[in-house]
Length: 346
Picture 1 (cartoon, one colour):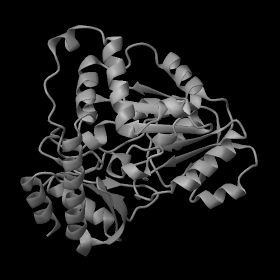
Picture 2 (cartoon, rainbow, N blue to C red):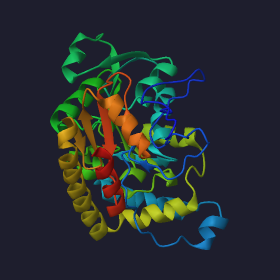
Picture 3 (cartoon, helix red, strand yellow):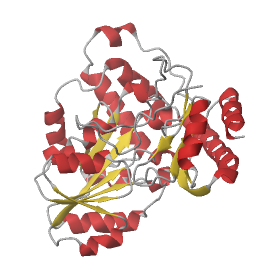
């Protein structure tokens, strides 16, 4: 029997202002955290099969040529039209590092975060001294102060999977640009819905776009993310980030992965099939709220009990403090993981 204590459900912060996230399975009374099936993240369970980076990429500081190659590969993959739109792109050690940079980079103002969503957005904007409003729909913007300068939208959203259309988002970006503000669109899960991306509009006034490498490619440990937007903001972000923000091996792996169109297409199909399979498996255990091809959000009055029962089988899923009847499941991946989850669900 495991003495189970959830290490934290999404959005809960301890006294040191640390927000607990997924990807950290519990440690039992014996101090053992091994052998868990971690379904608490939206990270692809199958990783990109990269070629080993050259020994030089480990020994040397990242070269500008390698950095430029990765930026060009990413921009091409995202569908970014830098020449036409006057936009720029930069990278950092994960999209988390970039999203928490923006509130300090931009002038103080009123910000609206569309939720429920990834809790770091609201936390970072409030911590930087902005006037924070959390809204449940874009229509709620009408009730905010007229000077609302920034809006944050995760598209597709985590954990609900909700998607907002390009026309609505671009219209909002134009309105905010007229106030010298920005729409910040976090596209961390957009790889599975590439047609929803606004990357082709990067450079448009009032629009900033965040992208993540690790989730779709199953390599979250590389810590690589991107920011796209008007060239002056990107230049300011680069200055704030400083030199060599991403290590050489990560640059090499990302450049290879972004250029591997056949693998990307096959991976998207595999993830779609796994997500459909997971939704069928969970159908008898609660109501489907939403999701993407990287995770499924389930609603059930038995969420606490189901989470604890899964923990007894050393399976970790995501819980949420403001929605105690929600559970988010990532994809199991291989056959053994599927069998384990199926058996634990009963």
